[in-house]
Length: 254
Image (tube, rainbow, N blue to C red; front, side, top):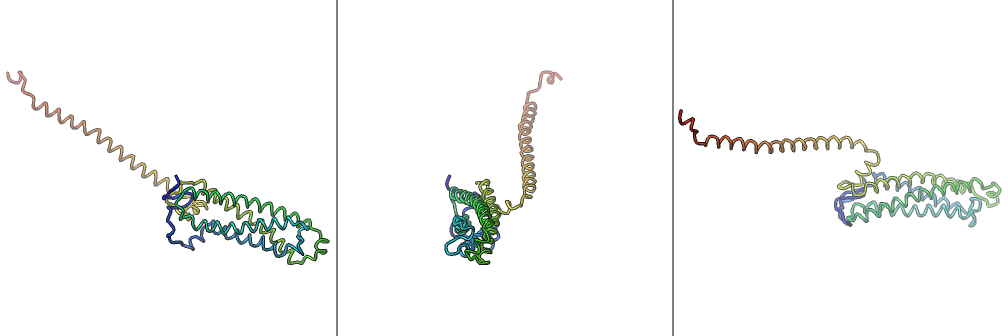
């Protein structure tokens, strides 16, 4: 079924394209904070390498252009994807199609998991190339101290990005698991539950148990009263029929 107005995949009922957008509530969401942090990390990674990772088209990380190129590739695509998924988060409440929401969540999950892995590869790759770069190579190519600092910064923020994209993949996975069970709940409520509001289960269980017990008791009382009603009617009918019988011969002789 394509359309769902009740809510699915971590969002409430589809509110259409005229719903009131609250930027403060949107910024407070865990996924929004993580995307902004990942976006900032991506700027540092590809910005530091592109601005200080080359000396006359020679990569200062042991002269390996693949190392510089891979770092820029990972950072640029992470930068673009964070912007696109931020827009997707804004439009998520407006989507009335369950399939569209599902595709967006799966895309978020797949990209976040893949880029957490790519950042891990980039961190290992850049660290290996930079630590094995000789002092002689740095002197020959006249690598400036600020360029060396740029490379170190790109390596450090590649490591930090592993955690940020891993957290984004975790939130996307939780939304995917919830599927269509998140009816009538907003993204704020879903993400709050994922972030650790797991104490509501006891309250829900207590309320559900009390209501279920009350309803069950009412049903038992009603059924017992219904069963006793025919018996009372039968006894009344028997009494009436016995009173209307003609007197017996023994009564007449008396």
